[in-house]
Image 1: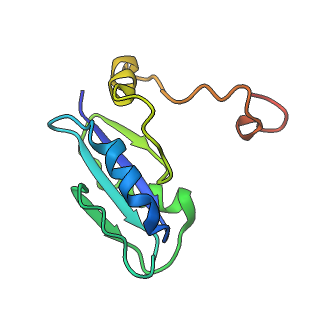
Image 2: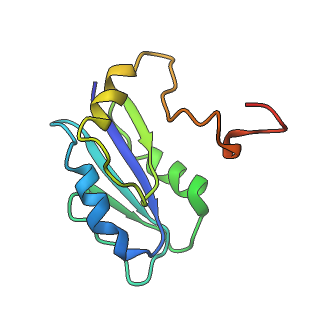
Image 3: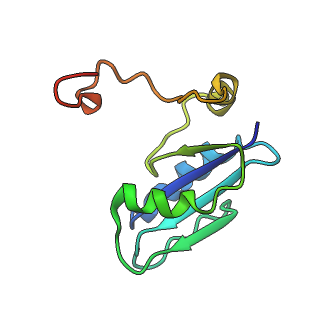
Length: 120
């Protein structure tokens, strides 16, 4: 199953090298879409298949939705730009867990960021 990775990006040009390393594991047929959230200067990620340049910052959700419009694969992964590759199999693990109707993501049950109204 091919995956499109959509990453909103606002400035932080210094993150490009580590991001590129993490994206080095994309397989043939996978796509990388960068959504430039009005960075100055514009973001250039060499491995991107497509860069969508926005005139104003729409935030992570707004930029992710714009990137979602460009997805042509069976699966999409919304990913932050500040990722670090800790395992060369990270994307293989995600791909292996994909099934129709299944959401796949990090196990954040111990992180308060995943709590909504006190629930996980």
